[in-house]
Length: 160
Image (tube, rainbow, N blue to C red; front, top):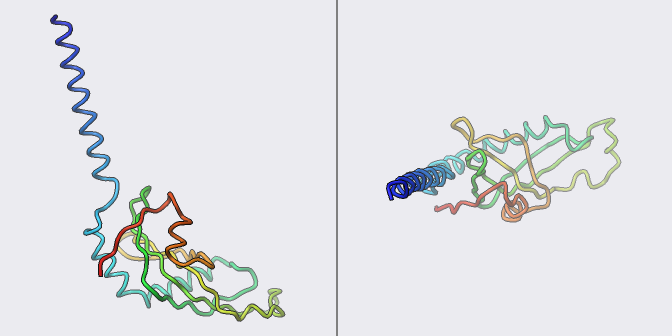
């Protein structure tokens, strides 16, 4: 009887510890939407500056080859999400991008070079500010981009 009581006590302690561990992990998984609201407002205020930063970062990638990034205009309502792996907030926003051919880059004779291109620009809130590595997803609207990114992002409802 004493042995059974000891096993039950040990089992109870293990179950309590497991419950506390699960609660701690679930509670720290993603920031709550209300805590993201100031970051969402900050993003909206800094969109013009972020457009310039996106243009610089994207041009620095050297892609697409033979083209120079000329202009990036952000438009429409951003879609906000969180990267569950890093817990960083992410903003996906519609962008209209224009290029021009780089002399000697092999694209000078391509008529479509001057066409405006629709894309979704990707921004992340890192080290206390919104930034970008120049990533754009061509031919996708922000909601479509979120669907395409699937498991790597969790959508967040933004309030105005």
